Image 1 (cartoon, helix red, strand yellow):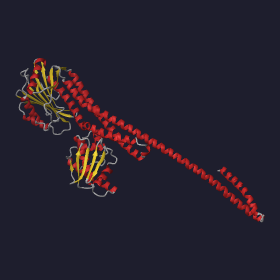
Image 2 (cartoon, rainbow over the protein chains, first blue to last red):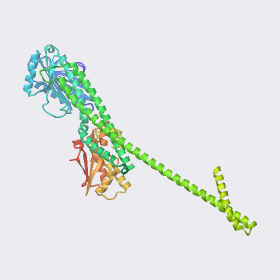
Image 3 (cartoon, rainbow over the protein chains, first blue to last red):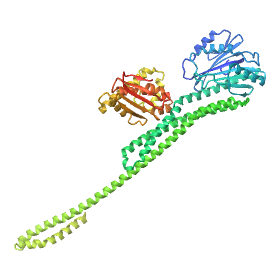
Length: 421
Length: 157
């Protein structure tokens, strides 16, 4: 027997023990080897795929690695269908499965249990299901006809590790399905695929559970701070200092970038979860399950569960994006505020430089006048020296008369000089 | 194998991811000790830089304020005689890093975050206790870090 080939005997009890793929010491080849040696009877297969028979009871253990999980399929059954149309006694099979499970040293993260029963027709299959549920005091969370099997998923009887994703199912095969065990093993393989999808989804969800739970509180405190910031922004413009705006801008930028990171990271997980949902939908569509009575089918119950696990991802993205959008609005108003302040500053700067220019021009004019005066005094002084030498007696009168001329000459010189400049 | 915590773990999600992958199976107490020592060294350098004197609640608050000056989600909500309460709420940097790098939030807070803060305050007074009276990992709406003079313990009630 290889891992791909199904056993030829009829399964009665199948248990799937699921661990994360990086779990160490879940049961090594040597453990399986020990188990292989411990059992009496007929052995076949290797250590990764073990099959043994002791008396009428057959057992098998298979190891699969897929979708981030290590799955150990432990099965026990019989070479032929004994006593159809009766609820089987699972005690002996349970005992065999328990002995196989001892090889797995750790408690599994999730457990899927699939019980099989066999009936000659659909009516008897329904009767077996009713009797089994009455005997065990269980209720169906979903039931339906999958090909020629009546499949029911039972409500959990307790919590415990991985209870949310763990399942307890019963499949009652009827009609031609009693001739070979192929369809039972095919259903087993489909349930294994469903289990791996559900476990992966459950892990993804539980890894983010704390984030989902904290979203309300985080959103509330961020909203409060945002309201404070917006209230600050409503203060008169003169009361807000550029340093305050800088601080607000930094704070909003940090919050904005975090929310963007959170939304995009959650989107990554959401896409992954949607992929898992698509996988499960494909698998369940292939079942083409027909309802049994008025209750939900297994397919609709599983899809509803999947969708309920998927919904918080979408909600988280929407809410963080709404928050980001608010922060973006606040960011825009801070930017506008800063822009207005900068504009005001530049207008004030322009006014101040114009005033300085006027003052400078005035100063220059004063300087020109002073320049004219100095040159005129100098010319008058020079003329006085000349007049004292030539017209000693009337030098003072001539000097006084020369003053307007010297002023005129000085103005002319000044204009000539400034023209050249 | 000697344990090394990257100096910028609280601002760099990438190093947190590398750190988790390397040390996730390491005994938590050892990581906590190293994180405490890192906080202690950082706290001492801040104390020296700012010239913070004394060993009372005001001095502890001054060190924490300096470390958290650019962190909008952490706020010192009260400074009383011998007691400082630091509150962390909203979308904190560890929450963001954990989601973006797919890391366990509780593990990082326990082995890195809280011992680091305890170390920071211990730079001011080695007898300070850090009691996490409210923890978001337990479902509380925020984390309250209460620093009180005691026996120098990190208490997770």
